[in-house]
Amino acid sequence: MNIIELDQSTVSKNLHKKPFQIKHGLSDNPLFTLPKLVELAAKMPRDKIEYNSGDLEIGQTAETTPKLNMKPQEVINSIENHNAWMVIKRVEEVEEYKVLLTQFVDGLFENAGLKGQKYRDLEGFIFISSANATTPFHVDAEENILIQIRGSKEVHIFDNEDRALVSEQRMEISPSQFRNQTYDTAFEQRATVFELNPGDGVHIPYLDPHWVKVNGEYSVSMAMTWKTPKVERLNKIRLMNGTMRHFGWPQKAPGASPVFDQVKVFAHDAIRIVLDPLRKSEKIRSILRGLIYGKKANYYYNEPAE
Image (cartoon, rainbow, N blue to C red; front, side):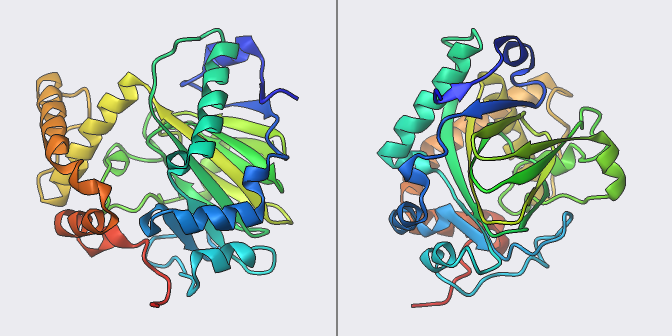
């Protein structure tokens, strides 16, 4: 099988708008074996790895999420017999994963008849989950293709264009605001459910709420995410809104005040010019998150001390 197979008319009509399923040829790629993922975890900065118990409710809150008193490599090595959920973030920082991500997303656009489509911030997130683990109801601030490598899972994706399920306020971006959202079983009437087996993938558009349930054996999957120019601008506004709300200055939703939106974009870019060189250091990143957003922003560090 090619690295990606899809229906061109479906993708060209729905990309960045509606969820749809694809096929891929990465299930046997050695980059996703457990030993290789242990090596990857050892290379990554600690704030790029997040893990907790996999025995969660769909509407689990941040405060009640059970942590694991283990090292990242221990979690991966015991994933077949320990109830756990892990994500290794920003794997594109490792060259062999970056090459794969670029090939896949460029192939997606080319096969959809959109060769040359502009995007930025191509990122990869690898999920390693025990059998029956749940990823709670949440939103992601990127365009996303989730591909299944090993095991199987159900992905429930929701229509939320009217913001009836997740409010605009809860879609603001802030490290002090955990991603999980309030869930009600009544939401399911608005869900489209995708069954993913090895070789399957699904497109999850920007800010579409979703939750995931792994079936009866451990799972390895990867989210390939990117931002269009439109999404990048919206995220700058939502990050500024989330930050200002954190300090007690709630703001209007993007689009409600185009002039103030542009001011926020300008302010965001000016601040990043100063902060980005500092954020190359994991220690400085954690200090900045704590100073600006408080202790909750550094929830990643949950393993025992050396």
